[in-house]
Length: 200
Image 1 (tube, rainbow, N blue to C red):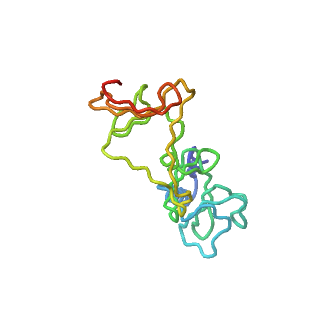
Image 2 (tube, one colour):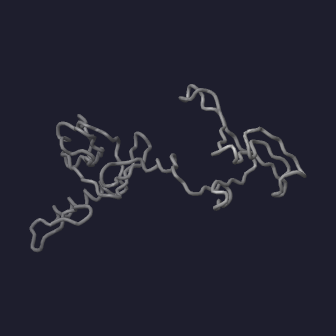
Image 3 (cartoon, rainbow, N blue to C red):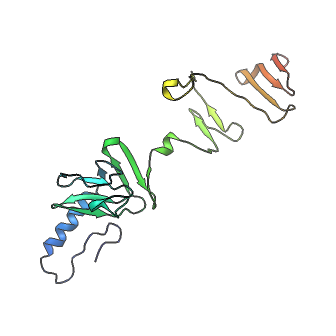
Protein backbone atom coordinates (compact mmCIF):
# COMPACT_ATOMS: atom_id res chain seq x y z
CA UNK A 1 0.00 0.00 0.00
CA UNK A 2 1.13 3.53 -0.80
CA UNK A 3 0.09 7.08 -0.07
CA UNK A 4 -2.00 8.75 -2.77
CA UNK A 5 0.21 11.65 -3.84
CA UNK A 6 3.83 10.83 -3.02
CA UNK A 7 3.58 7.02 -3.28
CA UNK A 8 5.21 6.56 0.12
CA UNK A 9 5.01 2.99 1.49
CA UNK A 10 2.51 2.40 4.27
CA UNK A 11 2.95 0.00 7.19
CA UNK A 12 0.51 -2.88 7.07
CA UNK A 13 -1.29 -4.15 10.14
CA UNK A 14 0.72 -6.81 11.99
CA UNK A 15 3.66 -6.22 9.61
CA UNK A 16 7.02 -7.54 10.73
CA UNK A 17 10.07 -5.24 10.67
CA UNK A 18 7.95 -2.09 10.50
CA UNK A 19 11.04 0.04 10.78
CA UNK A 20 12.13 -0.98 7.26
CA UNK A 21 8.98 0.40 5.66
CA UNK A 22 9.04 3.44 7.92
CA UNK A 23 12.64 4.25 7.08
CA UNK A 24 11.99 3.80 3.35
CA UNK A 25 9.11 6.26 3.54
CA UNK A 26 11.29 8.77 5.40
CA UNK A 27 14.07 8.44 2.81
CA UNK A 28 11.62 9.08 -0.04
CA UNK A 29 10.09 12.02 1.79
CA UNK A 30 13.57 13.40 2.40
CA UNK A 31 14.27 13.19 -1.34
CA UNK A 32 11.01 14.93 -2.29
CA UNK A 33 10.70 17.69 0.29
CA UNK A 34 12.09 20.98 -1.06
CA UNK A 35 12.88 19.09 -4.25
CA UNK A 36 16.15 20.06 -5.89
CA UNK A 37 18.25 18.23 -8.46
CA UNK A 38 21.85 18.70 -9.51
CA UNK A 39 20.98 18.76 -13.21
CA UNK A 40 18.15 18.06 -15.65
CA UNK A 41 17.96 16.15 -18.94
CA UNK A 42 20.45 13.60 -17.59
CA UNK A 43 20.29 10.57 -19.91
CA UNK A 44 22.78 8.20 -18.24
CA UNK A 45 23.57 7.50 -14.59
CA UNK A 46 26.65 9.30 -13.21
CA UNK A 47 29.62 7.00 -12.74
CA UNK A 48 30.14 7.74 -9.03
CA UNK A 49 26.94 9.08 -7.47
CA UNK A 50 26.85 10.11 -3.86
CA UNK A 51 24.21 9.10 -1.36
CA UNK A 52 21.14 11.29 -1.85
CA UNK A 53 22.19 12.68 -5.23
CA UNK A 54 19.18 13.65 -7.36
CA UNK A 55 18.84 14.16 -11.11
CA UNK A 56 15.99 14.88 -13.51
CA UNK A 57 16.04 12.15 -16.15
CA UNK A 58 15.96 13.28 -19.77
CA UNK A 59 14.34 11.74 -22.83
CA UNK A 60 15.75 8.56 -24.40
CA UNK A 61 17.80 7.77 -21.30
CA UNK A 62 20.04 4.73 -21.15
CA UNK A 63 21.29 2.25 -18.56
CA UNK A 64 19.57 2.37 -15.20
CA UNK A 65 17.77 5.54 -16.35
CA UNK A 66 16.18 3.85 -19.37
CA UNK A 67 12.40 4.27 -19.48
CA UNK A 68 12.43 6.79 -16.63
CA UNK A 69 11.97 9.96 -18.73
CA UNK A 70 11.03 13.06 -16.70
CA UNK A 71 11.29 11.18 -13.41
CA UNK A 72 13.44 12.14 -10.45
CA UNK A 73 16.35 9.73 -9.98
CA UNK A 74 17.73 9.68 -6.45
CA UNK A 75 20.61 7.52 -5.22
CA UNK A 76 19.56 5.86 -1.95
CA UNK A 77 21.28 3.06 -0.04
CA UNK A 78 23.57 2.30 -2.97
CA UNK A 79 20.88 2.05 -5.65
CA UNK A 80 18.80 4.30 -7.89
CA UNK A 81 15.22 5.02 -6.86
CA UNK A 82 12.85 6.77 -9.27
CA UNK A 83 10.05 9.13 -8.35
CA UNK A 84 7.31 9.74 -10.93
CA UNK A 85 6.26 13.41 -10.81
CA UNK A 86 2.70 14.55 -10.25
CA UNK A 87 1.10 17.75 -11.65
CA UNK A 88 2.13 20.73 -9.55
CA UNK A 89 5.53 19.42 -8.42
CA UNK A 90 8.25 22.04 -8.40
CA UNK A 91 11.93 21.31 -8.79
CA UNK A 92 15.01 23.50 -8.45
CA UNK A 93 17.87 22.76 -10.88
CA UNK A 94 21.06 23.74 -9.08
CA UNK A 95 23.40 23.94 -12.10
CA UNK A 96 21.09 26.41 -13.85
CA UNK A 97 19.57 28.24 -10.86
CA UNK A 98 16.24 27.39 -12.51
CA UNK A 99 12.85 26.52 -11.03
CA UNK A 100 10.72 24.03 -12.94
CA UNK A 101 7.05 23.04 -12.68
CA UNK A 102 5.59 19.71 -13.75
CA UNK A 103 2.36 20.40 -15.65
CA UNK A 104 1.27 16.79 -15.94
CA UNK A 105 3.09 16.25 -19.23
CA UNK A 106 6.49 17.87 -18.96
CA UNK A 107 8.73 19.98 -16.75
CA UNK A 108 8.38 23.65 -17.75
CA UNK A 109 10.28 26.75 -16.75
CA UNK A 110 8.29 28.28 -13.90
CA UNK A 111 9.91 31.68 -14.43
CA UNK A 112 8.97 31.88 -18.12
CA UNK A 113 5.69 33.57 -17.28
CA UNK A 114 7.64 36.35 -15.58
CA UNK A 115 10.02 36.80 -18.51
CA UNK A 116 7.48 36.40 -21.30
CA UNK A 117 4.10 38.13 -20.95
CA UNK A 118 1.64 37.50 -23.77
CA UNK A 119 -1.92 38.68 -24.59
CA UNK A 120 -2.39 40.78 -21.47
CA UNK A 121 -5.67 42.68 -21.32
CA UNK A 122 -4.21 45.39 -19.03
CA UNK A 123 -0.80 46.39 -17.71
CA UNK A 124 -0.17 49.17 -15.22
CA UNK A 125 3.32 50.23 -14.15
CA UNK A 126 3.24 52.43 -11.08
CA UNK A 127 -0.45 53.09 -11.69
CA UNK A 128 -3.70 51.33 -12.54
CA UNK A 129 -4.54 50.55 -16.15
CA UNK A 130 -8.17 50.81 -17.24
CA UNK A 131 -10.38 50.22 -20.27
CA UNK A 132 -9.42 53.59 -21.79
CA UNK A 133 -5.70 53.15 -21.14
CA UNK A 134 -5.03 49.38 -20.99
CA UNK A 135 -1.29 50.16 -20.97
CA UNK A 136 -0.53 52.81 -18.35
CA UNK A 137 2.72 53.88 -16.71
CA UNK A 138 3.44 56.47 -14.03
CA UNK A 139 7.16 57.19 -13.74
CA UNK A 140 9.81 59.87 -14.13
CA UNK A 141 12.04 58.39 -16.80
CA UNK A 142 11.79 55.85 -19.60
CA UNK A 143 14.55 54.24 -21.64
CA UNK A 144 14.36 52.29 -24.89
CA UNK A 145 17.75 51.00 -26.01
CA UNK A 146 18.66 49.08 -29.15
CA UNK A 147 19.51 45.41 -28.77
CA UNK A 148 23.15 45.15 -29.79
CA UNK A 149 24.58 42.76 -32.35
CA UNK A 150 26.42 40.95 -29.54
CA UNK A 151 23.05 40.36 -27.86
CA UNK A 152 21.50 38.95 -31.03
CA UNK A 153 19.96 42.20 -32.30
CA UNK A 154 20.89 44.46 -35.20
CA UNK A 155 22.04 47.47 -33.19
CA UNK A 156 19.14 49.65 -34.36
CA UNK A 157 15.85 50.74 -32.84
CA UNK A 158 12.60 51.62 -34.62
CA UNK A 159 9.52 52.86 -32.76
CA UNK A 160 6.30 52.19 -34.69
CA UNK A 161 2.86 53.77 -34.39
CA UNK A 162 0.23 52.35 -36.71
CA UNK A 163 -3.38 53.29 -37.54
CA UNK A 164 -5.98 51.25 -39.40
CA UNK A 165 -7.01 53.76 -42.09
CA UNK A 166 -6.05 57.24 -43.26
CA UNK A 167 -9.15 58.70 -41.60
CA UNK A 168 -7.98 57.54 -38.18
CA UNK A 169 -5.47 59.33 -35.97
CA UNK A 170 -2.05 58.23 -34.85
CA UNK A 171 -0.27 60.90 -32.83
CA UNK A 172 1.69 61.93 -29.78
CA UNK A 173 -0.21 64.24 -27.45
CA UNK A 174 1.62 66.46 -24.96
CA UNK A 175 -0.35 67.60 -21.91
CA UNK A 176 -0.08 69.82 -18.84
CA UNK A 177 -2.23 68.74 -15.90
CA UNK A 178 -4.12 66.44 -18.31
CA UNK A 179 -4.89 69.30 -20.70
CA UNK A 180 -3.52 69.11 -24.26
CA UNK A 181 -0.84 71.61 -25.25
CA UNK A 182 0.73 70.13 -28.39
CA UNK A 183 0.16 67.20 -30.73
CA UNK A 184 2.21 65.71 -33.54
CA UNK A 185 1.28 62.96 -35.98
CA UNK A 186 -1.18 61.92 -38.65
CA UNK A 187 -4.50 63.33 -37.51
CA UNK A 188 -7.47 62.38 -39.66
CA UNK A 189 -5.40 61.83 -42.83
CA UNK A 190 -1.90 60.86 -43.91
CA UNK A 191 -0.35 64.33 -43.63
CA UNK A 192 2.09 64.88 -40.78
CA UNK A 193 0.96 67.82 -38.68
CA UNK A 194 2.03 69.73 -35.60
CA UNK A 195 -0.77 71.24 -33.53
CA UNK A 196 -0.27 73.52 -30.56
CA UNK A 197 -2.57 75.08 -27.96
CA UNK A 198 -5.14 76.75 -28.10
CA UNK A 199 -6.19 74.89 -31.32
CA UNK A 200 -6.20 71.42 -29.76
